[in-house]
Amino acid sequence: MNKLDLMKKANDIRKDIITAVHAAKAGHPGGSLSAADIYTYLYFVELNVDPADPKKADRDRFVLSKGHTAPGLYAALAERGFFPVEDLKTLRHTGSYLQGHPDMKHIPGVDMSSGSLGQGISVAVGMALSAKLSNESYRVYTLLGDGEIQEGQVWEAAMLAGHRKLDNLVVIVDNNNLQIDGCIADVNSPYPIDKKFEAFNFHVINIDGHDFDQIEAAFKEAKETKGMPTAIIAKTLKGKGVSFMEDKAAWHGAAPNDEQFAVAMADLEKVGEELCQM
Image 1 (cartoon, rainbow, N blue to C red):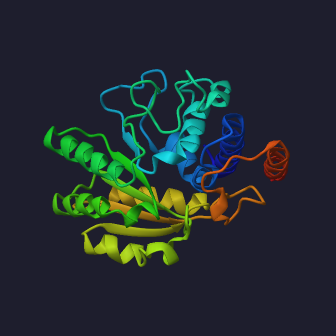
Image 2 (cartoon, one colour):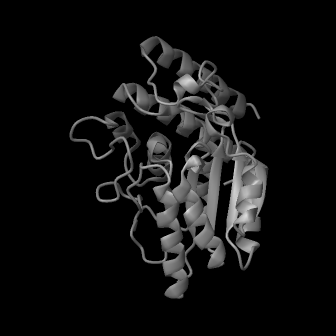
């Protein structure tokens, strides 16, 4: 998939996120939108996965550590063909398999149930270590929020990953600079994020998380890095693509009403039209 196709797919995923959260009347659009380009690259380029065989033994594993941004993951899985896109409208509804956080028992393509912040990276480290011990070739990827890395468990996991030289592990931090209570630097600053991961013996790459050239280069560099895990610090914009949501902490965990939904979809339709002119 070329860069333009990836940009179009990311815009489709953003539309899916807004559609799902609006239908649910609840959810977390801000961090889902900021990570949409990362989700797109992972599921349409990077990950060795097969929608026809979601549990194949040699598949790459992905753990959504910031599990509340499930709408983004679900949209990517649906667009990739793991389940019908139409099912996204059942998000958080009673009886739906698409609940507020990822559920490995009921959702095709989900490798780990997650949502308690800080725990996902620990599971990912365990998966990567298991692959090493079993001499398996699969790689493990995990996506964290920048507010999430205020959790101490994150750094316990990072310490073990660095110590065991898990070069089959890629930790991605969605650095949109906002959490539910506001700016991460004001709540409990994790900066400098890159230097912290370096101190835990990670190879660190800083990128613009909305630039597919930089995303591609970072994942290529991660694959070529031997003897240590990689942390990709992706600078992003919370609410990316929706005018009134961009860089607003209030949209961390709120659903648009009908009027806001119409504006959001119009914003994304405009982006789609511009991409079609490229």
